Length: 238
Image (tube, rainbow, N blue to C red):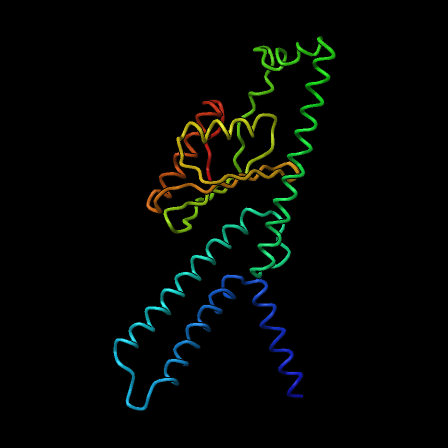
């Protein structure tokens, strides 16, 4: 019966680590630090180790702990960029990110091939040259739909980096307006990712800014969206 209780404990710990990645990473750091402290105590001479050696060991432990903390923060940020995460362990997050990058590269190659095909068709058929004029005509209101913001989060990631996550309804010109919006704010964008899922757009950006600017940046984005939408659009409440 003892082995059955052990198996239940292992299963419970496994499930908890899968669904609580923050706890799993932090627990790993804590275990490592405790092991280091235990090893240092056990390896000390009977007369006691010098104070300088003990201080050096403590500094090494703190440095390694900070390094692992930064690594975990970057893994969390990477996980936020990848839409499909199979598991929450470090190896799976990196593997899923690589697969996602390869998928984006394949989509890029497909889009470039489609663009080349369209350009060739336009060259062979001069009548198609009137299509851009129709799309940009003042008589059409295809590009007049407002940005319908569903969710806006600004999260500090450390190292003067903010993670901006925007979810909005997919419309004809939403993608174009979002690009113009961020360009107008003159943000120091490190990386940006745009994902389309069903009828929604998920825009994730890493921005170089101080953590103190979190609320101010969120207000600037809301104000910019309201300005793009125009006075006839109801105010944003996020």
